[in-house]
Length: 230
Picture 1 (cartoon, rainbow, N blue to C red):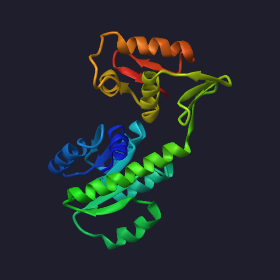
Picture 2: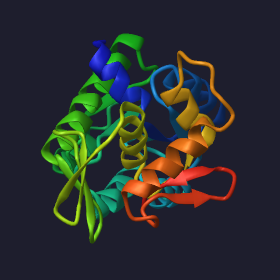
Picture 3: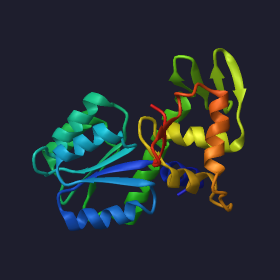
């Protein structure tokens, strides 16, 4: 796997829907080698609730599950989002599902047990999809007065360009990648200060200086947990 794909995946989240608890737990451990967070669900209904709550970047789902099966889950997700990469896993090839799945824009249909080489291949495909989405959305609206320009790494506020430091760029892009969801202080520090000793006030000072450049309400402080952009 190329480094650019590893970076994209490391900042991505996966929703894993699998009713076999032992299989789900072991699969989650493998996935965490590639991605930042794995949300796990033991049935389709719980999976859809987690999807609505966290908007994961990638979905991996079994076919046969209680409450909502894999096909019903995917149809529900596709009503909300036609682009999120979805991978299906199954212990056997379901011919009827294969035919139906053509309409659902799946990344791939994998037969259990999933081989590591197959997993890396489909995750690479997912990383490409995520990358293409980011590239097509080069200007991300943050509120009515402010947007972020991915291409030029600048903020646009009231038709003025605002230059950012490297750390501010990394911070903003991390929050945008998880737009609508909390990013914990630990996640931010792990991303921004991976090779440095972290002064106790470093993140607080970063946010303070950034808020001087943009509307105060764009960066939301979630108690002592972390930050988010709606």
